[in-house]
Image (cartoon, rainbow, N blue to C red; front, top):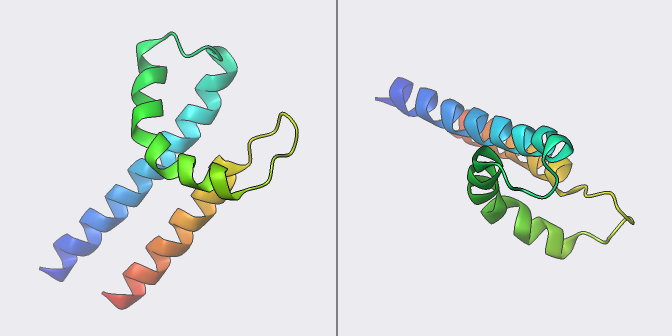
Length: 84
């Protein structure tokens, strides 16, 4: 059972990591968010990025919330995997 749980947790965190990375990359192609994939990625990642954005100070036009979110997801994944 713990093998299944560990695999599920790894896949979940990897999917969130790649969704955030995808949102960053596609924002260069579709900055207005008109494409459907952009809207899907925004809906998936905004619950993670929104609270981080509210806490982080602004750095002009640079949004560091995806970087912080990816680091936090990686840290949280490591902590959970060690606990299992």
